[in-house]
Every structure is written in C-alpha cells, then in structure tokens.
Length: 124
Image (cartoon, rainbow, N blue to C red; front, side):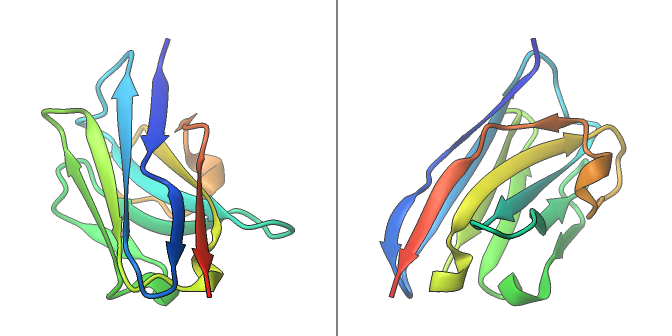
C-alpha cells in the first residue's frame, strides 16, 4: 500500500518558521515529481511548491517565493518544505503529493498520490 505521511505542522507566531516532511512508503518516488499544496477553510486547494524528480528544479506560488523552500532526499524517499517568515494567511492544511511524471506539475488534479495533510496555524 502506497502512503505519503506528512509531519511537522503546528502552531507558530507570525514571523516564525516551521519545517514539514513528507515520507513515502510502499513505493519509491525517486523518478517522480512531488509537490506541496494547501487548503484553508472555505477556500480551494492551492499549489504551494513543486520539485522535479531529481530536485534540480523547483517552482513556487508567488506569495511564498523567498520564504518557503522545497527540497527532497530520494535516498530517504522524503520531501521537505521549510517555511520561514510565516504569515497568518499561510494558515491551512498542508498536503504533500506525488505525480507519476518527472517534471513539475502545478495542477492538483494530475497528482496520483496524496498525504492525509498536516495543520499549519500562524497566529498574528
């Protein structure tokens, strides 16, 4: 059974930092792109960041550029999202996902595997 499990969410004050991890089990995603999405209450799920299969290319939504960093370690089948300078508007459930292609994909409907999500709350 393929699973993606996120960890590292929590409550932080505005301006603070959090690091998320996403570990895969059941299969390797070393040849596949992965991404982070988020969904705030009452809003649609949105793309946050994506990374290609080797980690050599990344893509971010404009509002997180310069504050968030996506990375991956294929030897550990794990992807990361380092979030700095957090803002209240970053509050959401964050999901990791994997797509069975090597290049970055920003549209959620193309992703094949999803984690259960982890809550990130940023207080003002």
